[in-house]
Image 1: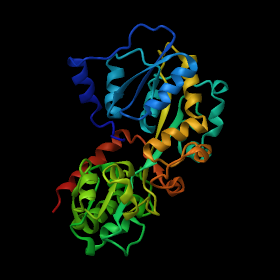
Image 2 (image 1 turned 120 degrees about the vertical axis):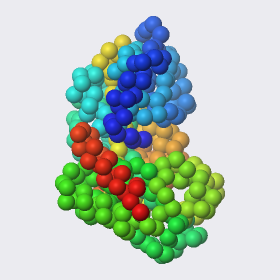
Image 3 (image 1 turned 135 degrees about the vertical axis):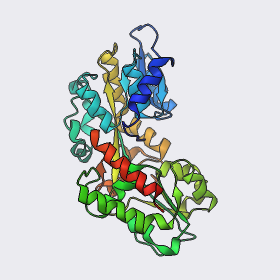
Length: 348
């Protein structure tokens, strides 16, 4: 879910220049307004909240953190809860865009996994954000085609799989994978470490790849064109009939890699603060949160108590993400990554 702030200025200029800025209708005190990632909260969960509290929930959606942030900066108003990723939570805190969370009104916050809060160093006390989901990209292997492999990023150096593999067209993911494989932080700005990561991708991984692909890898894997892909589990399994899921091995490599935390935050100008607290608390009831997990076949990484209420097998286990590291906002350092990525993408 996770683009960088690199295109933010352009987004703001475009939106400010004339795109429609959505603002919610007049507040009636009985309608909660969410600004969320597309299809990120099951309709059944929203309906249960509406029925229990006698309110309505209205949802506007966005496809990237940049889109969400740019619209808010351009004047979109009326939203109560927004779901930014970790780097944007940090940015929005610094921009004074968020209200503090009253944890006395969110007793179910006790269900949040301490490991998640430890990784959420930008707001580990949940002063401004309550984790919604923590995830990571991994590797999918077609077990009918590939039988001898290590659960490691080193699989992309396997010459026997030449032209049967792809990695994401995402610089933070690929460079982060290489850094993690080498034992470095996925947020490293150390020139020597970044040079080693660049060399690893260019000389050992890229020669075996068909391409870098962030959009069609799921379909190409499902069709059998690719036997090994880096990507998000929900994309891969979304393209494969469930009765064939046992032919796929999806794993988070043992070295770890980049990961993300999406959180529920209350905007500074929210008109329905108490109702927002009720919603955040409702989401983290284990039996409710389990419905969200079942919808996407996610593991109970954020709310372990929900696992007892899950009815579907997750596509990977939460413990696999333990060695992963949150992608931080690199600010000016992002330009360094972009330069490296251009060399990776366009070096023969």
